[in-house]
Length: 456
View 1 (spheres, rainbow, N blue to C red):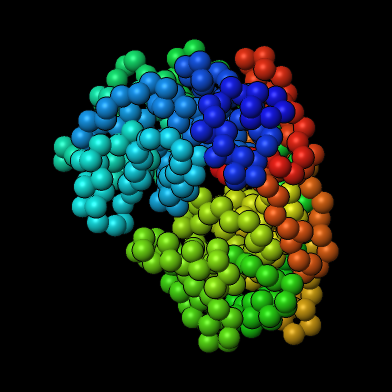
View 2: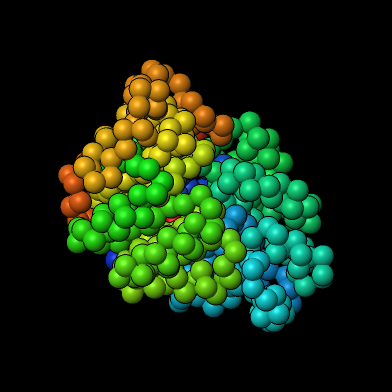
């Protein structure tokens, strides 16, 4: 399908989508929405950036709008579970954006903030509830939420839910849902744990798998600096003073390191803020908003805090500390090269991080380009026994635990060149489209131009 009109969406939704500048659905939207509008369950395998949020938000809005019903206090008609505060907030924003011409109420609830405003909203009656599992389970136990009226249920980023230890809360929540419901299960990977959970949720589902044409890492210029720990601050400051670094995320492993790096950068005249799990939700939201609006140029983040960040035009990702799990490296650098643009990923590697680098190179099956800065290069960090001294082994994806993953492809850009701009699309894939498959026989989906649905 080449247009949203062909998806048989109702006029108020089409109007909202058009006002956002989107004309062509992404493969997951084209393959999922028609079946979801018919009430089918869905088992979807898709990465962040493929347009999956709109793929389930648009049908939910349409189904609930057509099946008009008076909402009861604390009893939502649709429930969407997501693993992080940031992702729930983004899904909530998508619901408000695409449902602005519909008379439907929605709410977003998550931990880390006072529950009283959330409880007040629930008591007013809502159609769609977006929640993290922990806070929802707490409110269920307190009697503030009832799930007996849920008609549509979405479990988003199921693999990440399992990684974060939400399995028991999820199972308890599922036990409170009506047997008769429409269920949507979405995950970036489908390993044995994920499939086992899916089987408890969906019945005779439509299977949709979306694989970007090439790994996202292929369109990101990746490099590594071998540097002693004591020189990382000075090297980071030097890199960030390059005007080509228009908007950057700097990743650390530890929360206190993120704080220290942000303070150091501000002291050196580079506006930055940190987000991590110990920061209040208000502080995290304020930092993200400032970053999105360009009031700060650098966001220093830990891995968990960065989950769900969906901001265009991030020119650079800098790994101040290498992740101790190679999969996190791919997630990190995927914050750049969005919306069809290319990106730059720079990593710092000290002597103690060589094993991490080796695991990363095995996972992505390529060696990172070594950059030697005469003022900071460390021969000690880059010696014959280091990861960069050995080519990654052929085949295999050392360190992967959660099954295969796919990421979008595209061209690389040299040096510190600026981002090539923003594309009006629901997804963050390259313009040439994606390979996709569906067991429902709906075909491989259309090739796209730049006016694709972007959110999600």
